[in-house]
Length: 220
Image (cartoon, rainbow, N blue to C red):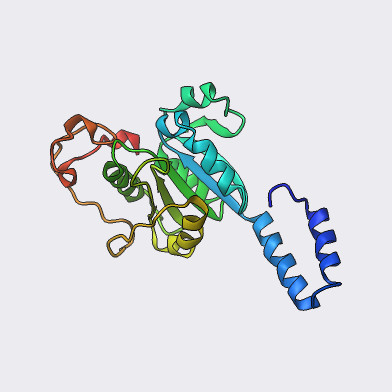
């Protein structure tokens, strides 16, 4: 879809009117125009998803349903973007924390995705919860976490209520299962735990129960 210009799309729809009713042709036209207009923000966290090639593959698949703008969330990952020669695709100029990057994306996009690859899928999920807990208005736009898409156990995680309208579609596009979370309140609920780890992915104290790990607040 991203390679079809509006002019060519209109021409194709007019040709289709010869073989099908006007109402159906008009429906197809409006549907594809909505896709062309849709804006998607991809917030990428950490170098792992970039080094593995997962970020590039996710960008390509998201481009099938709308115009995608990718931004690096956090300070780690800039070198990986440069090494992968993606600096013209992924914005590395802002130096925003993931939560601040998401809030900025809320203002310029229809759908926001957080791409992450945690030490494990579970620590990645908790990272997403912590990031969401730092958002002032978490229900502004649909927010979905794409966790470890190239790994066993990778999944899509809805980070707010509005995300549900997109889960089935993105699951088909990425070939990933969706996680059913606990009931949402105003934002994803994160338990308060004693400080047992300072790693953004909980790796420094990986033997302790995941629910009793905390994360360095500076990374969110």
